[in-house]
Image (cartoon, rainbow, N blue to C red; front, side, top):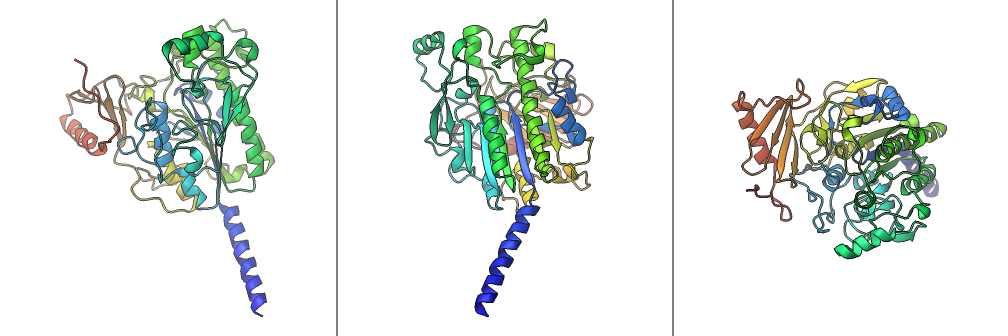
Length: 476
């Protein structure tokens, strides 16, 4: 009798565990790199074709007021992973000092939390928060698998000599151009994987390799639940190639843009975005083929605003759409990002949301989806009610950003108000009604001193001093 009861208990436990895993939705978070608010067809692009992302928006939700974690790569990704805004998180800017740009031991992260609910987790693409032998390696922060770039400068190079597979450097067939090797030696730069390849050796295009690994992993874990963080380095420029050749928009071919009367960097920019769109389409096709697309939330967005670092013409593409500014700015052009979400049967098809959310809210949303408690001490509110089209969406008192570049600056979004303080120390507070004035053209600070005072209280409250990051002194 005892053996029968024990066997029954084991079977019951396994059945319950299987049922719980079956019920938990999968979550795919796809992050583009330096994609502007106006760079997708569904967000108004007239030059760049993105049919799969446009269809994804038609089948799901377009999130018009979704913000990145920061205006540059590393801190934006730190905010995404930790659910802490820039005034509280460890990585607050791009830095040559790797300690400042390394996720710290024991940090709460999205994959770390989801593993508690039985999720398989993987990061493919660009990390930027820790090197191969550091405490910030992604597999020390909740990811079961990793393939791609750890170092951000390495991620500039679409045809590098090596790629990282978990903890191993894997050689590729690409070979550095002699011009790059000479430049690196003359300037005393270390070999961190950055540079550009000779034309004849451009054989292994890393975004394609990343996607091959992604498709393979998805098939391995399709029974779920799984969390995939796909952090593509497109359409970021190869900054070093721009300096050496004048063209940093690296792509195997220009595709449908080959015969356009455009510059090569512009053809490359458009081709990179359309190629990335095709990757998204392939993922959705696989999910449908496995009959799991209705149990999978896919989000697509960008880490910050658009750039011109590859020689591309941002104005020609109207890359920032109706918002003002670009990467490294804290006007909305630097931080408001094109975002679409798809989850058939859960997200109402063709819906549009103007709920103000940001990268830090992904942690709470993932936890709620997985049936987990939201960790305490986070700057994170779940936007799952918004995705489901339900009432009762909680709103943060404010969203907050800071930047240590260009003399430093701070920014807030609270309700209809957008605030930019520049320079950080001693600078004036600019106040905009971001609902009526999306381009942040009419500064209302002089007319609304009580709102400015409230904003100044929020700015002071949001920033906690960091031992590694000091607000820069204003330039004299």
